[in-house]
Image 1 (cartoon, each protein chain N blue to C red):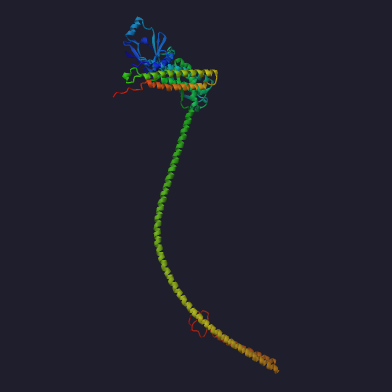
Image 2: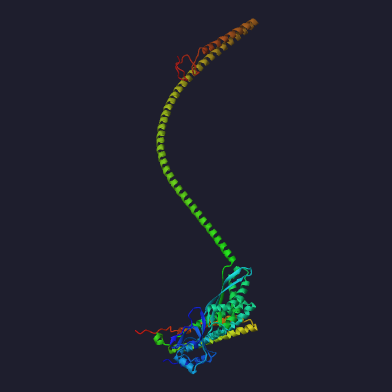
Length: 400
Length: 178
């Protein structure tokens, strides 16, 4: 017993095997996995459809050869193997959307075959090779997919953005489900899923390029901004460092200057103290001298005041004397006049003589007083000096 | 040898009304019985899908996308269920050599009851799908509700079928003897 392999490529979907053509010494057996099925077509009738089993003595072997010779087996035995699991089929298409943009892409159809639908593949094998591959199935359904599904769906898109919308995908799937059922059902397939994959259109490429350029420009802008920010940071950092260094240097210099100024201040204060002491000394000295001068002046003034008082007394005495004398003279003259009048001797000549003597007397009196004044000396400071003084009471200078 | 439990015979009879050849997992026919049950589920699911295809086609062509979308969703759910069932584990023939735990009486009871319930459920889904198509034809306004109810029922079947696999796939491994 040897194992028969009906599928030698992943692209093989189904195969119709004429069991009578398998002439081997050992009988053949085939293992059917859960996603594989085998429909037995015996003498033109569809027999059992098997899956998940080991199909023993399906062909070949001595006993079957003997049975054929004797005529106890079926005249025609065919085995239709098929994959029942879901498989993807990519159908290329080209089309146009409503605004005239060309669209290229692939329509993906995910198909499955039900167990009871396996014999329907006879519709295919009636006119085609006994092996159905993925390319073979695509060749059959592609035209109808393009005509019934792709073209109407693309025509409903006004621009490339509509191609990317979820509504388009849903419409595509629903259209495929509805429009492709007839053909797929005839072939025994059930459609599980359908969706389109479209390449970028020309306008989308332009938009993509524009977006890339824009992104690059914005990236450059961001880089420039970052660089500028870096420079400004560096600048701020450098300025801050310089400022700190300057502040440190200034502080150091200020410290030195302060020290120098403090030493200078100390010197100045010492000098100031020295000058203060000198000034005080001079001031005290001057005050002493001024006090001395004041004392001299005071003493001189006191002496002057005594002299003036004595002078005033003397002048008063002189004036009293003169007044007394004038009074006595006036009395005398009055008496003389009265006597002359009583005696009848009062003539104008007598009157004239009397006035002349009175005038002369007055001139003598004035001359007596004026003679004292003319003999008085005057100091260099302008003070009138008395003949008895030995020094000027005002300036203290001696009188020679 | 584990015989068929008597208290599950009514369930077996119920399943046999639908599946000819079903004998309640008697010795030597367990895999065949499993296969029969699975094929029945697939067949019933295909019926549901066919109803939904009709609803979908008509509603899509009429522009009633909302109902068409619901029907498409139900079809996809049917596809998922079919794929689950087709690729489900079916247990092993030679439990002793494989290291699997041989199903006990209790396991078989659970399995038979489960088969009965799954088939009931999928049959109910077929009925609802049929009703939804009928509702669409009579335009009584319940189509969408029924379509969505069918989807819900198919989804429940998927989940319920998973429990069946837990029994058959030999998840209970043999206890190791110390």
